[in-house]
Image 1 (cartoon, rainbow, N blue to C red):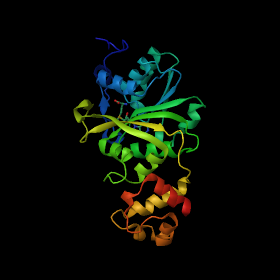
Image 2: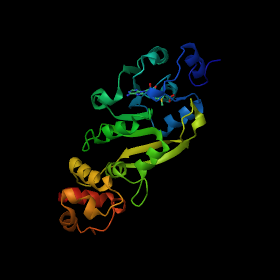
Image 3: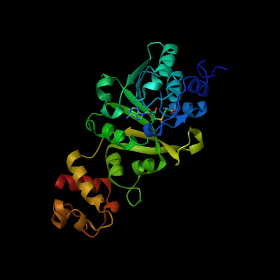
Image 4: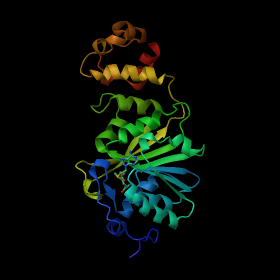
Length: 276
Ligand code: SAM
């Protein structure tokens, strides 16, 4: 029976017909539940008029949801050549709207592919490279991000690190970077049973929106400060930031040297970076 969403065959049938056995090394945990893929696509906001980047479309469950919900142009970047014939079938169902790029998303410059058009990134990310991909997109051009929104599935623990506030155990370098540049929130969790095969951990869909105005701060300096401070997160700052100036640096910004990294707000990290 065809899928109610788009008259293409059900995903399980497609995967079976193509003999696509999931590969762990590629982080392949597929979503076959149309309600769930539709929910993820809906939570990305309106898709008409946007280029939507999807990383790791796999057999195309989320891709189909994005197209069914009106994405004008989906650019799907997939590393596994076994998925390409399946994606071509989806492309034929939506002529001119799905571009398939075979390659490694870590080496793909989405800003170039966006060609200046408004872009959203929506993906059920391969977990082994998800954090690095996010950092690449966040830091590509902090003054002029090429993306309007990101709606991304991560392991829940990574989601918690992205949205973490000071004082939380999850707060670290990623939370400071995301807090400086974005408003991020966990939209909903997805249990392991929703995937084929099920991963060991719970997943979360995270919404990441660029802040209209951010605190003035130099990215490289901010990374030096957070690297030092969280490199020894249990130690007092006077010890952990010693290589960057220690107590003298902290005094310039009025930060108590006995505090620990996880108590500092994003604004305090930015002030420290600017004082370097
Ligand atoms: N989007 C599909 C879904 O939701 O069912 C598949 C998601 S699966 C978690 C991750 C996908 O990313 C796999 O199809 C995998 O082959 C692909 N992938 C893994 N590493 C990649 C990389 N570096 N660049 C592009 N795609 C990658």
